[in-house]
Image 1 (cartoon, rainbow, N blue to C red):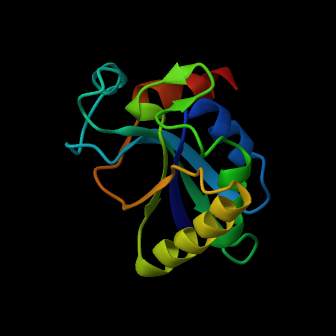
Image 2: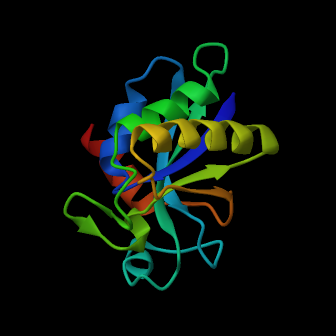
Length: 147
């Protein structure tokens, strides 16, 4: 199994969309890119932790490629809005791809470049090394119980 970590606004909608894609084995919501290895939703909402809401994906690379996942990432959210998706506004709702290795970084840069050309240079998505990922345990468990 491989892992992808993506920030594309509030994590609930993307988590549902990715969970329905063939090859995605497991999804988990959390926070990433912040100043500390642990945080809470309340802390993230202050805008002071620098964490983004993310979806962590475990996927079978024999069924779906990282490149395909990144293309889907760009298709299911607006990568041209800075720190916002729809009515959700704040740095935690930014568009960002967190890579785990150089191969992921290169693929993300290539796909971002292609989408940026299609969108007339308006893409604001960041590409960053995975840093301080922490699951949103309290929310993820409640959500799973409702399913």
